[in-house]
Length: 220
Image (tube, rainbow, N blue to C red; front, side, top):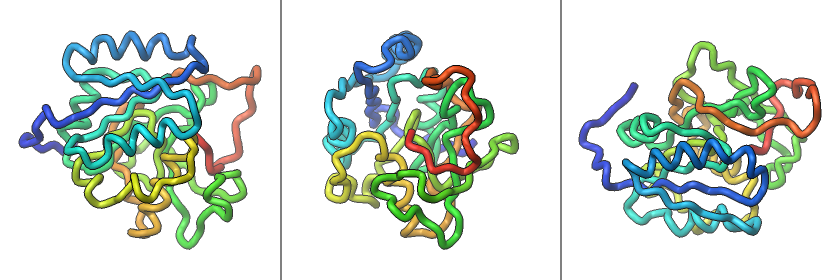
């Protein structure tokens, strides 16, 4: 694990973003955050409209804080928050199962060289990118879901999210940021990955779901 003991633990903002959907799936997250709040300041952000998620990131961007994003059905532990904050990586994430009842489909992907989704602003699955098997614990990926993510102060200085993100959607922020950074560096080293995967209480809406085609560009 990459660590930097000079990180000032006071320079963090933990944002827990939640909605009124899937309240049952959020119960374990609230319990976990009640423990985390004994060690870190957590802001609970109730999103009501499509633009609220992006707006709360904009309001906290560039304010001198490492941002930790926790989405509503992710179950983080205090040690995972601490690990993200102590890591030297500028953009870090823990993988998670996209759907808890579909095995081996994790939230980390790599872009294929020279390819991009045709309609990347809508992410309508018209193209494919490569889902990464995590058995070998890859150190980096090109695209990651934001379930449990750190956006460091340095990362915020390099990318003007408040100015550039104007899509007014909550469901593609992670994909949009990943793609924009990939188009700048052309390397699948956007997110530094941490292990083991964090628990994600999001289940399929259909009984006995079939595995999705490999490599589909998903909205997280």
